[in-house]
Length: 156
Image 1: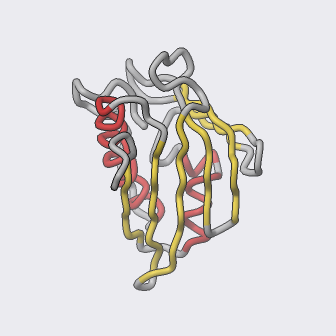
Image 2: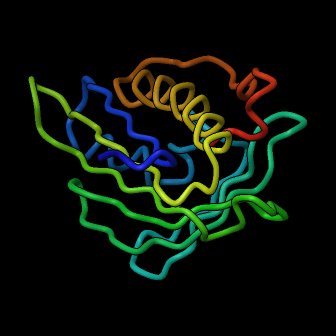
């Protein structure tokens, strides 16, 4: 049985795993598809900090739990000042799998406290994984205006 407060997404990216991994861990590459400022320390216990976009964009903070270059990332996640999803209260796990000449990115975001938060983060992930898929494949996802839906409080 699937937990109700978990977001799962997959996307096929026309790029090797090493490229996709860099777009998930290198702050300059992260900013090509998400956020307005990023700090990452991609090692267990290292900082994950991302400043969001737009009037509702907040600061997301967490810590890396697992870093297996070109294969897997796991980090805690939450919003500074967020009462429902505070920093470190949820977990993002990303697996990168060689497939069809590119990379299958499989993401699970667990530990979300309500169905509303799961829905809001699902909307954010759909937006940002689409942008990542374009950027990591060498395309230009265009300017990021954040996620525009009333149900979505913050990108995620």
